[in-house]
Length: 95
Image 1 (cartoon, helix red, strand yellow):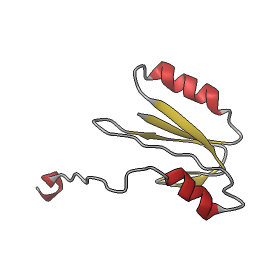
Image 2 (cartoon, helix red, strand yellow):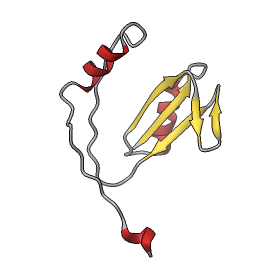
Image 3 (tube, helix red, strand yellow):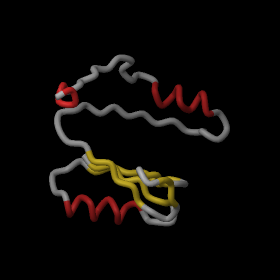
Image 4 (tube, one colour):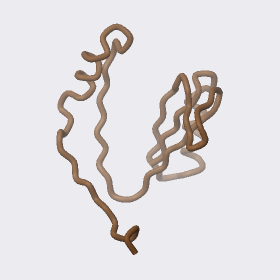
């Protein structure tokens, strides 16, 4: 899975199409942002990518009206989502 977070200055659909071409078979999704972030800090006019591989389940929701009623919007987006999750850890860090 590849998630692209692009500046609102960069058209999102061509970026997603390029990623789909470059990584056939991968699930590609994205969103525009008003600011991008990496391990080096935040930026503007850039693209941040997040990649995930392995077995996973994805749940999504959508809410509208964030600027007028953030609490209601987040509640609507989370409605029907699982409230529990499994945490997998590796002992490799202890070796």
